[in-house]
Amino acid sequence: MYGYSYQYGRILGKGGGGAPFVGLLDDYPTAAAAYSLRKLRNGYSGNAIRVRRSSDNAELNIGFVDNVLDTATLTTFASGTNAFITNFYDQSGNGVDLFRSVAVGQPQIVASGVIITDSGKPTLSFPNGNSLLHTSGFTELLIPAEWTISFVSKADAAQTYSATLGDAVGDNQDGMLIFGSQLRTKINNVNYGVFGSGDNRTKTRLWTNIRNSSNTITINRDGTSYGSVSSAVGSFDFVQIGSSIEVNQPDFFSELIIWKSDQTSNLSGIETNINTYYGVY
Image 1: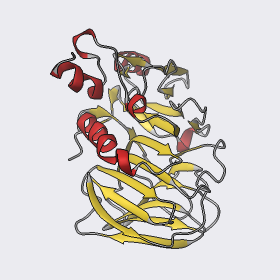
Image 2 (image 1 turned 30 degrees about the vertical axis):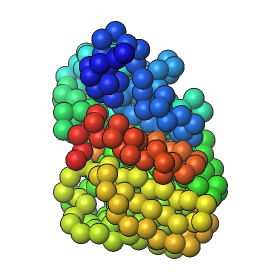
Image 3 (image 1 turned 120 degrees about the horizontal axis):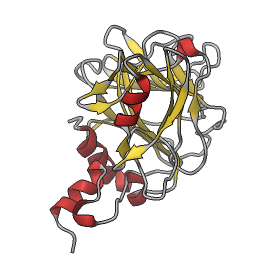
Image 4 (image 1 turned 180 degrees about the horizontal axis):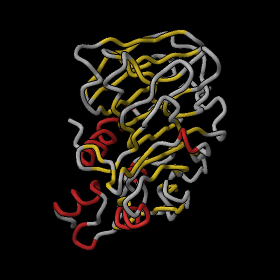
């Protein structure tokens, strides 16, 4: 029988006591898309990210060592300069990668040879108002009546609100936007805001957004219910994370998992796994 080191190691990214690695998506599979700087499932054999070195614009794929980002290779490649992310690879197996070809708009992961971190873990930084990663792989992702979306992000502390994910079609900025006191879900240009106390821009948060078959949206912040709203109808495209015409970029972004299903029964386990690794709350 596996001991404590196995149970703890399976969440932190290393198999304890010689036991096989078990990732978040091994315990909670069927994700439609999954992006992280840690490995999320045992069977994933791809890379985490592709980066561009600012000194000569050379690019390199960066994978995993012991199921976490290969920081040694990343640091060596950056060679004392800056490194920016051109691709954030989908670990779900569905091939829905995030990418950004325009250099000025790429999120940053290394600054002057030092990996950017949030609470000791590598993270994406969005250095300017043009920073984003986008995908053409998901069109009308959220047409299904049910979804579950969990992500680890810090809103821009200097702005009233900032984007985490959504579409970028003119002024109809549908998606999930972090405000000072709420996570606002916007569908068909209608705001479904869930208000709470405190300032969401002061620290990194773990957000989970669930819409059930009755079109009720429930939001958790840092493992605690943040409220719910009903009659949330319609859908939006998942096109990007980061900034756009109407909203500001996040300070940090570390992980995003999307299920096209209601994962309420698994919510405690999903959030415990994410929080154990990132130490959000």
